[in-house]
Amino acid sequence: MKRSGLISGLLIIALTAGSVIAFGKSYARDIYTYDCEILEQRPEQLTKYCADGGVLIYDITWKSWGYNGAEGTGTYSENLCEPNCAEGERVEAKVDLYLSGIEVIEGTRVLRYLNANTRNGEVLPNGDTYVSWDVAEFAVKMKEFENNG
Image (spheres, rainbow, N blue to C red):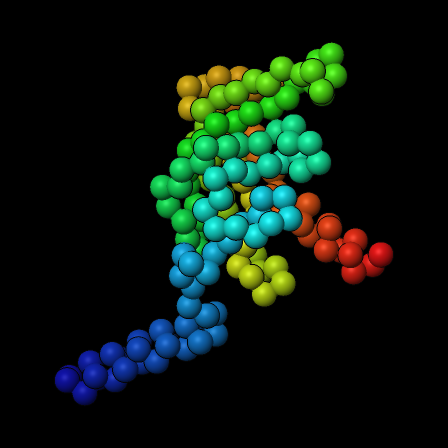
């Protein structure tokens, strides 16, 4: 009985060590995301439209950050561009935000997808109480452009 317990214990240790070797151990310090095309850890701002900053979330405070995702709070800000973007009024709302979808991009573990929900159910200019975007999209496209152009 003792021998089978010892064998089972050794098997569990071997399987655990094998999975760490196969998949790599990941620490929060190894996890990044993008603000435009800049790799960052726990950024204070995430920008959807990098050319003009028309939509962004700023004053971000992170509650958690790791391989399974990140959770925080911040302020959503959008330029309504009325009558034009230079003179447009900004609307803002407090949001809870979540980063998910870990991917390896050029050897770096990146949280790729942002979802943000208004904290008080406030409706945003898009007609919803939430927004989402691929925070790595701009960086990936810029790298493709650099490699092909």
